[in-house]
Image (cartoon, rainbow, N blue to C red; front, top):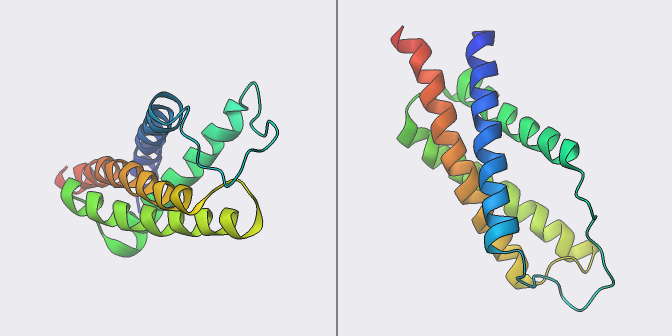
Length: 138
């Protein structure tokens, strides 16, 4: 496992996850009600961006590590498929946890959470795998 490739893949994955997260959750779904019922203001204002960036770095490193260390995934298409599957499972798990323990998500919100995670992780997984594959070509 080359540390440089993991770092570059993690950085690229972080950028993709953060950018798509902003696009989905702020631009597209910003006013979309995913909660079960009306709740007093629950979102932070302002958003704690360092925590979001750290979260995306963690997700990107997880994908980079799995692809490089265990799965040997090194093409965009394979990374897209594997990343989407990983994202679907994580998004569904997180959504179900929130649904079961809070009023943050409705059932519609759980499904949308799983879908947005699958798309974000799929595209990030493709980019990560592509970067990891560049090492094998050199």
